Image (tube, rainbow, N blue to C red; front, side, top):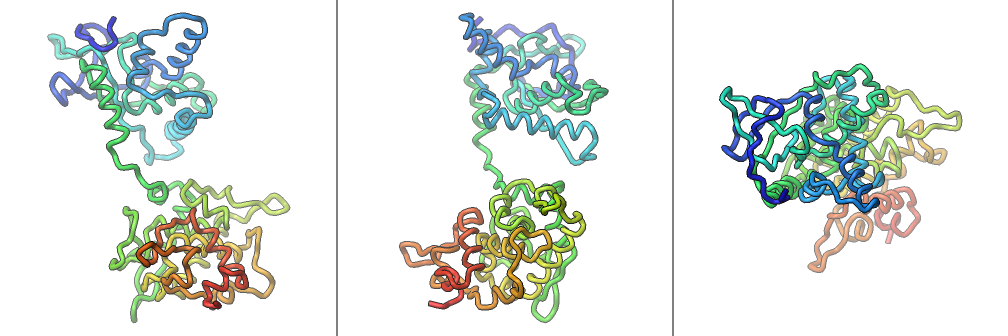
Length: 410
């Protein structure tokens, strides 16, 4: 059998109702999980069997060779894709258990049938039952579903009926290997990657995001001679705030402020990852403050600072730069009851920051949160991870070189 040309239509197999999306090229349907996993081989097992065949000196199965033409390998347990399979298995299992209510999903699964599909006289289509379907997109999710079904007890799903799980599929059929490879390429490279911090700011189960949203929804700040809801001054759904926009910062930057205030310097790198209440370090008695206490302290401390310094945020001074926000939040952490590096006795946050020059000028911030370009302009392109620690050190060490620089003590 050639691995590049398949002309014999599928006329017998698993009967299913399909909708034509592109005549002779693409169809879609809803199928139950039990039958999907019966029809689509476990990619992890396919790879393992292929490795054993090579080691034993046998020829690799044609299905494995064909899959390798249009998919990237899962690889060893430490590979990025293999880790992603494990994470998705946990996520899907939690959704199936009902842990997320309705706020979860399995993406549409894109399959490839090298052989053309056709309808019979009754209008039913037939899918190949053995080695006939390969996942072009969402293979990670297919592999995760196989893993759960293989060992449901490990996911507390012993009694789950996969026949009740409905999954959306689309099938490209009768197209060449080259066409299938092109679809794989387009699906994986044509889209614009979502900024990780932006994606995290939309995660309703993330503790950092939860506190951020509650602060936005509850806080009002000075706005001229009046007040305005903080939510009206936070940009959501975009990566950057323009210089002329009314908004102070993006939601992902505000989440960085919350995350660093919650976790201290560790939060500078954690700001673009998931944050859980359990990430807060425990004290010498192996305990941490109640979650409600953490939320209250964060909202009070960050909220008070935003209200007291609203003019600095309105003016888009250095205080709105992501790196400065990260260092500032980590400094706020030193005032929290759970801080592992509390402020020295008698030192307050206001006193520590009293003489900081927040103007966006190179003489104060160059080499710390900004840099001079070859044209002489000041660039604030560095993110929280790049310069957050430098800002933290400058804010918390007034007599250091950088500490004196940001305070105008040259």
